[in-house]
Image 1 (cartoon, rainbow, N blue to C red):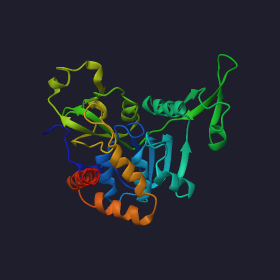
Image 2 (image 1 turned 90 degrees about the vertical axis):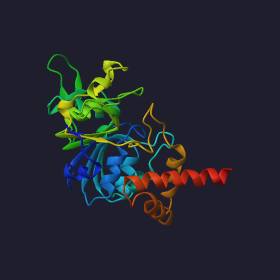
Image 3 (image 1 turned 90 degrees about the horizontal axis):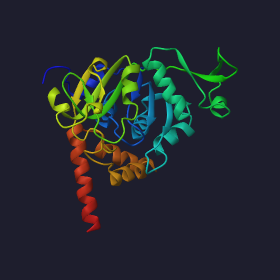
Image 4 (image 1 turned 135 degrees about the vertical axis):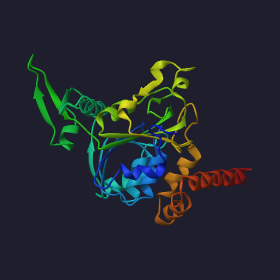
Length: 290
């Protein structure tokens, strides 16, 4: 299609071992899961993830690809905790930097504005300072206030998923919330954008408001058309979260045998194989409930 369009197998040309990777979306909502699955198929490892985390964190931790997670939370929304991340954290297999959500946004804003830090009241007088002793405070030069100086996060590359884009990288969200994907794009050295559909530039605003154009092409290096690319998280209004499959994912993490079966069924093939396996899962589930 020209422009910045690329295929999924090009993700690992941008993401390499040891990098800091930002992942957009929020919990189990509009996550770039097709690109995450591409990382699972690769030999990339030793990653630092920056995210309002969801199942991407659990999957990458379960695959042994994560060294550190910088996050505001890691949740599956309707399931409070991702079981793989919980196991990795409790087992000491990953380093963690857990921020208050306001602090996390401040870190993104600092990175997006090419600042070394931003001051914030969020997290003051809380255990965030005890959990992150490297954090420093800064005195206001104008009054007696003291703030937490949240260091900027600057991912090497960020992975985002939106509803639509043109081939130039102008990304559009159609759901109820932009989350903070624009800050991820601006804070990162490079950005890869997967979308449900690539359209002509003029079609982006033919029927939708101009304010739905969330990501500017100037921050995007590659665009991937990936229908259902956020599955099993939601991508409103195109589709909601696949709650049955999410429950299956979480339940499969309870023991090694179940997880091995889940991995072999859904994660060993290519993206087309994944979606076919999901369809087969739903057919079997419907048959059992009939």
